[in-house]
Length: 604
Image (cartoon, rainbow, N blue to C red):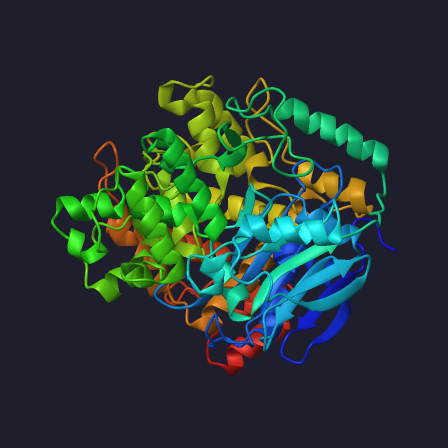
């Protein structure tokens, strides 16, 4: 058995009730794991123009070689598929889930699961130490995510890990999540709806196997090294357990409801807890998790001060007649009833279950009040609704948003500048941040306050590659890996390569891993292009970023167009179409991908 990987990927055809396995290692040698392997499987197996709810769509659960080990923040699992949430067209994208399901899957003998087809009845998967069964789930259908997990754990024993959908996923909501435990979910992408479309209620897994580690002592040293570089979040109580295995960040907070003993995992997507009375606000947030609804989408729908409902109501867009009940976004009773309607597609909830943008079309409401950035996803580290990062740093966020398939959850640039410089309120001076920029990105202009549009494509590309590496190994994006955590402001950019070596014995330099990241970015771009992605889609971010930020600064359309040109040229893509060229794809070992795109007339 190899080090790090456990050697098999499970393939489940729900239509024909057929279970097969595929050897992990031929894929791992090229694509490592997680996001990398999932992208190749998507290219290989998902027809480009099918709907997300088509039985032929693949729902891919993929771990990485670090998952289930002592590697810091490695309790992760990638979920990838055609996404019903993406807008205006259904596109392939990804979500990442923490917790203990990913590690347990490896202990049970599998590096990943590919689910396809559609069962003729409601089922769940039971996986135990290499054995797999498709089991009846009629007794689970209709239950919320917490009760579903409770019953499966009672049935299969303590230590069983479960990921499942709630009634929102059963009813094919485009904003339905896949929940695991009380604190973790594959939240973005609407993959709970994909799971529901396959009549798959849950996957329960239990394992007693092991993951072989090449150099255990070196791994322990690296854990301590990262722990020293990356202290826990200030909001995390000293003795609080993390939500995921091997987490060193503890970014999630727990809120306890003493009256019932219930626990809510609260973070930036939990503004509903501010509703009064707070006990009822707690209940509203908990209902999102139980129903299996995307808390981020719901929060921008109406919880936040700049949310759709609040702005639209002020403009006279919504009334009580639309909702069939008193319209008061500050009243928990309104939300308790509305969440039920969204989940079960009743009244206005039927439209809202499609997500904000599609709902606006169905309800014939203006989209102007929706905090939508691009591709069907709401504001996130874009420098406008949050106010962080500030200009010119949000230009990097704009480029990431423009060229991704979802909200680009890349904390390493914007969040670290906000955390450590804090625009004058942080522990580091901008001159110190500039020194870090010189070492990491090659120029101070990547972060300098007076840099305008200069040198913004380079840090975008660097972080996109590092994001792929983290998503393939797999480790949490919140871990950095540290750029500015140490006393002098410079962390350790070699951590990923060192962790890969300690766990697998495979030695790769930072440059080799960055090259791998570039390959997967190009593979994912090829998937997008085959689905119809163009430069025009990338430019769809412009209207959002033209809105003034907190300091009144707007995107300059002409300068951003030139910045996109620079980005495409650095990527080796055609700057008129945004498509990868044959030269670049072959350079990265993707000749077969270039051949397919050429056959379709889609090469750059």
